[in-house]
Image 1 (tube, rainbow, N blue to C red):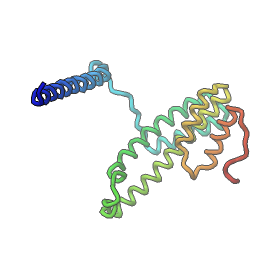
Image 2 (tube, helix red, strand yellow; image 1 turned 180 degrees about the horizontal axis):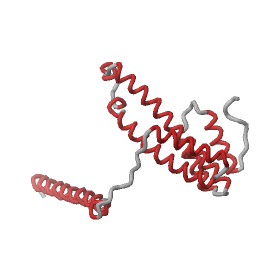
Image 3 (cartoon, one colour; image 1 turned 60 degrees about the vertical axis):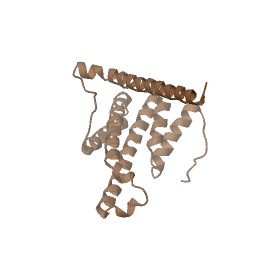
Image 4 (cartoon, rainbow, N blue to C red; image 1 turned 60 degrees about the horizontal axis):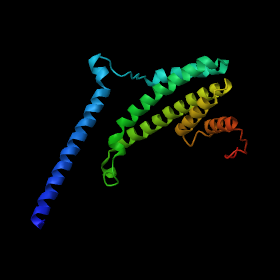
Length: 193
């Protein structure tokens, strides 16, 4: 085989490779469209419940009242509902901030004062929403632990901890204590009183 023939064979190999790659990419998109086919054929849209901030606050108050009464069955339902609604709103608020969070250090000087204030207000809102999610998951976990659903309680506690902000030490202690109770580990507090 001459060098020229070798180069031609290499070109043919590349062409075959890219044709195969194109087929695989096309197949992937066809597969994705099959996943959404029921929505297209049956006219169903995916269920996405978007709540207002005031509805979330009202749901949180109701959940706390139900939990304080000791009605774990209703508290589990309400806390699950609230955490799902809050996660949707967190995603929406987070998406609204993408242009500001994608700024590199050179562009930061070009951001207006009102945009910086908007960013600060949204960070505060996100922190409150994440703490609401953490509280609802902690309440769910505590109720699941009461009815001896240890696996569900452990999942809810660990998910709750992922939403807790550093300033919420009481909620973190509560979730951490719940996890420790599930595994039978009792230790001195990690945060000074």
